[in-house]
Image (cartoon, rainbow, N blue to C red; front, side):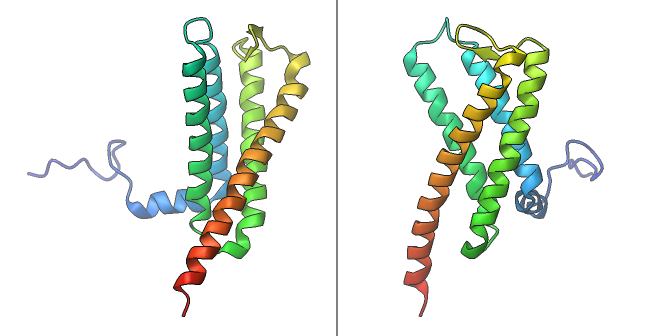
Length: 158
């Protein structure tokens, strides 16, 4: 008797092809990344009174690694010449997903801002800061990744 779950079961492990297909679609991977990052941000900032600056710094690093890892996973499916459009799309979709999640958190009165909660009046400033931060971090990271990739592929070329 086989102990593997049936293929229609929610316990079935997706095949490697499913993970690659997920990472090729900008909408899915950037959207999931945006939602996860915003919920992660809300969880970390809610620890403000309990945690010190070391925990905040570690959480910031984990968030940056998560975003850059998702972008790397997505870009690994495409040639270097297609990266600029892919990075711009990824950043736009990721930020839009964060905007939507932020809206939901504000409506539920769970979006932290400083020592209080964000309101609808704070939404535009939150959105602008998020867009600027993601564009700088992910754009800069993608640029460094592109340079490294270019050097590595040039070395292998005959």
